[in-house]
Image 1 (cartoon, rainbow, N blue to C red):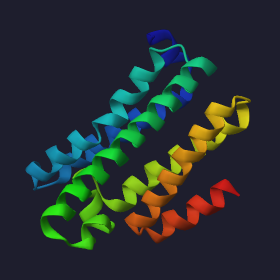
Image 2: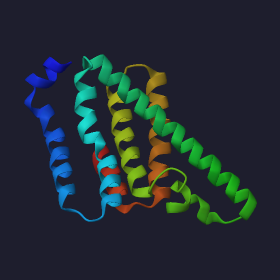
Image 3: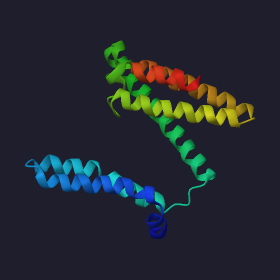
Length: 166
């Protein structure tokens, strides 16, 4: 792990950015915000270390893609279930749109970006597969993910979804 981290120069870019952030904290007077900012950016330091500890091959990447698609699918079902429950209590259609739909997880634009990535991964799976079941499931996932992007009303993400599949 350490040897791979030492030998791959690109793995040093994100930790170097974190160190620059850490040095920037020396000139702040708002230490509570600086601590929070360093905590948020801790991923820059830890991600290269974690990634260098794995042997990354095509099988590993395919597994990550499938887990990502599954996570986005579960998130969609979760958000729609909450929206239907809210609708049955309030009779307000607004619970199916924009921030009211995604407020239980994250901002609609960010979730739309995850949906776009999942769309690309599903499309990739469909192209590589010759099984009818995989193609039909992929089509169903794509319809769900497109629908969620439209319900989230993130215009840039809508355009990106249509362009990425073309």
